[in-house]
Image (cartoon, rainbow, N blue to C red; front, side, top):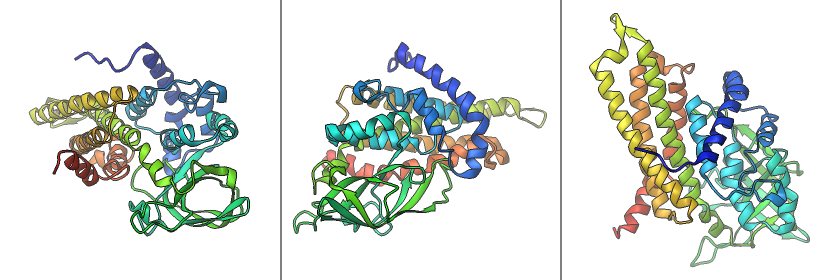
Length: 383
């Protein structure tokens, strides 16, 4: 079937991204994988390429294109090559929407030019060691003291936390109300060079190895009042506004990983010989790959439909949850079957299918678990 979600501009961007990946990422990726993060100056190269500024208005140094489709092209090309851009996905996909929607004009002038160039990398800190997905239960506090707030607490699982220059930190500025425990949370854009701000362990993950993930701690960190993002005590509501796009990004990335797995596996079985013939000649191999391709085709259709709806401003929270649930579950099945066709070599990190297998697993956890997605869908069904 003819694919209509991308136009000539997107395909031109695809060629640029593909060439950049081949020249600047693939030759160094094994080194980054072993180090557990990309070099900080790599983000400056992404800034020069223009990937950070696509959705940033022109007056702040960006291209001013209000579309998620260029990000989707990037997801496909990264999966195709079996690599990643480290923690920079959080910088653009998660942090930028908050800055565009909530920042004042003065804040945008301060933060967005550096955001576009990669000189100021952003991360977002929501999750805490003792609360997990229960954001309303967070205990990190920010107490007003004159012209600043005093921040105390800790966060964990912070993607991009090692290299970040600014972190959007969620903290309690007021106690929860008796009938609304979500009240009292505020967002602050915290300078990581502030006294009392500490980057703890770089967490050792089974997948997404080049994406730096850290623990953060705040001990009497003074945050200027002008770095409050949005209104005080209204932060929890803001956190939900970006969920459809976040879940769309995960869904699209999962579909792209599944498609890449089929591509890697077809190449492998055509070259690998067993019992005197290519593995691709066995009927089981043909049937398995055909079944995987059918699932990828279905996931692509779901991902494309959700992407189109999002660009039109029509993607609902329930539709995004459905797309995430379907695409991530498909990707898990497809990548597992593709690894099986690699045999023992599929378990070796030198093969991209092994890295895909590990990277893909978190898709059913972050951005809302598969179980949470089912609850959202079931509620819409009246169940």
